[in-house]
Figure 1 (tube, rainbow, N blue to C red):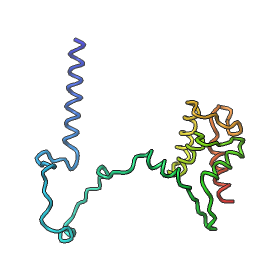
Figure 2: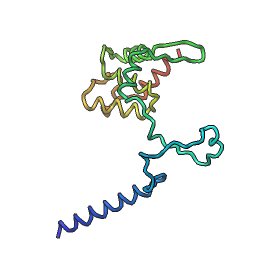
Figure 3: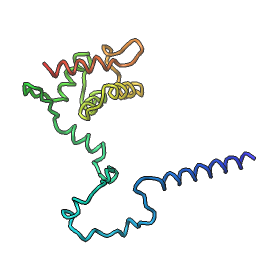
Figure 4: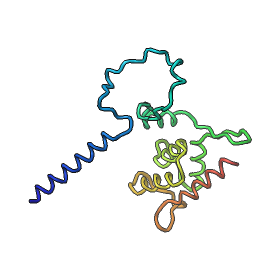
Length: 168
């Protein structure tokens, strides 16, 4: 009896999944996309006739995250403020961490994660989750001056110090 229930649940799931796939916008089962030919008119002549564009980003091939990050970490990242003062983001974060009693050496995980997240323009909540998760996994030992009574890292103080140091 239990096997029949499981089989009926699996069949229902499969039917719903296939139905959802077939209902996707832009999916036409009658069109063979592999053998579709290019239009005979040049693009410039048909551009005015377009009424709907496919805004799908699925066909865009971006470099992998590790390639993009490694390229960014090899090159100094510059922050420019209104006074046109330039500062190296890696040096800035290392100085701020040193202010909290943390020495960032080569290949230091806290420093690397912080620079990577700042370079990507991640939110404060993302940086908080990233650093506290990495610390909980033992990837680095958080600075004592940044530890809250709950044991979490006080990333708000760290980010505020980074902003303060970048503006001065």
